[in-house]
Image (tube, rainbow, N blue to C red; front, side, top):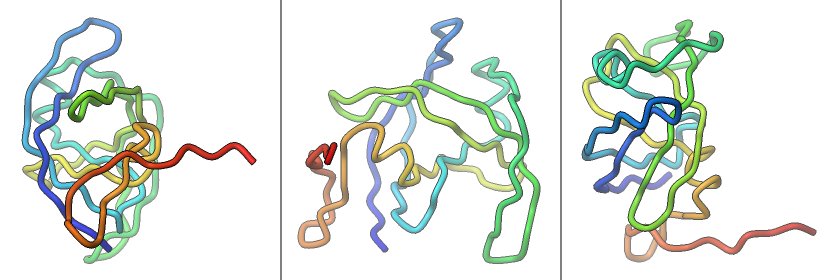
Length: 117
């Protein structure tokens, strides 16, 4: 697993409302997770629910979507809404959508090879 802090931007793809944040990239997390207050500030909408296993057990979380921007990469990604986290956690679905990976030798983000085999 890799962890790295990055400057990022979350944007409501419908309204264009955005917020700049520091986010923790976690290659052990499947989905990107945002705090409830950011979900509300951006005016995002719930599109479903996901059952998620956390360190303290299972929890049901609302699912939405946001435009995520890291460096010069941007893309729409599913996001889960947390009532407990205070920071944004970027998971591997978003990393792959942006074409990024965590380099385990430098602990920095770098471009990934996009495959279609």
